[in-house]
Image: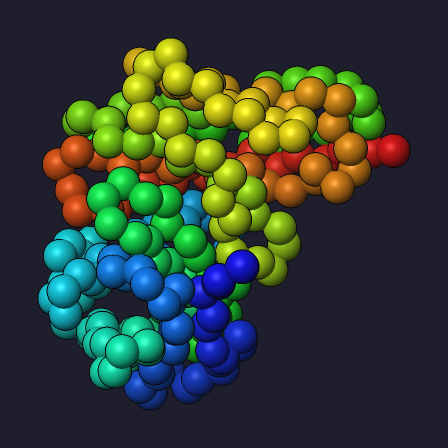
Amino acid sequence: EPEVTQTPSHQVTQMGQEVILRCVPISNHLYFYWYRQILGQKVEFLVSFYNNEISEKSEIFDDQFSVERPDGSNFTLKIRSTKLEDSAMYFCASSGQGMRPQHFGDGTRLSIL
Amino acid sequence: EDQVTQSPEALRLQEGESSSLNCSYTVSGLRGLFWYRQDPGKGPEFLFTLYSAGEEKEKERLKATLTKKESFLHITAPKPEDSATYLCAVQASSNTGKLIFGQGTTLQVKP
């Protein structure tokens, strides 16, 4: 069964450093998303991406965040200057057309020191 | 403001003891309500989509129902392997795919 894959599974970074989280969505999906989950809290929407453009972003997704689909398979989330409060589990998800359900990867645990 | 609230936060059942999880929502036009299962250290795993009040979906021991204000996930004769956190999420008609999640119900089924 096709699945969303994320790398790395765990990233430890010093505060102020740049980090790139990588995702390979399901191959025939067209819509891509990033969510995050701070320990003990709800899963929160960050950004949605379709047709090489951001279609919606949350208040969390400020100028420090960016997304890119550099080729036909990868989808990345970059945080330019990490803060302690960026420590969380980051999930990538993808979906097909219309109201198809989103399928999630197993996440990258980001720890900011 | 769009919002999802799940109850209870935690539920302990004996194997075979049926129960229901609740998901209450307020949203500006519902496009869909989704149930996911999340195991520790894993991403949410899709279970069901419900689109309109009165709709029901079933999968093994799980059955999801939807009204205009809430959804229930009924678990019939649960087994220990059903232990997980169950997440409810809604997609509003005003946005572009964004899911709004509840905080989840952590289910523990004891043998």
